[in-house]
Image (cartoon, rainbow, N blue to C red; front, side):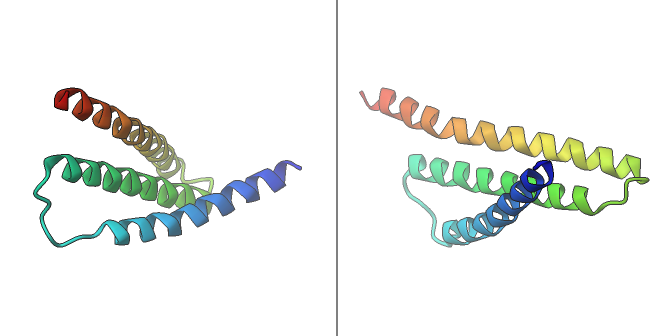
Length: 106
């Protein structure tokens, strides 16, 4: 049962890796936004997708690295944790930014 959960998590990370790449491609826009609010939201979305992409890559490398490479394994674990928290902070910042902009408009 425990091995089924590990494979399920690895599958979800692999699918989210592909989804992040698709999300970044959809957000890729060569034209400059005139509205600062929309540009800030777009940047926050890009940052959250990019940080999650770093998480997925670090998680995948962590699974492939040999266990006797302890320094590399520790570096990947730190990278995984930092990118996870940075993704969370970007996701939390999106509604806070909308709320702040809404308060300024009033």
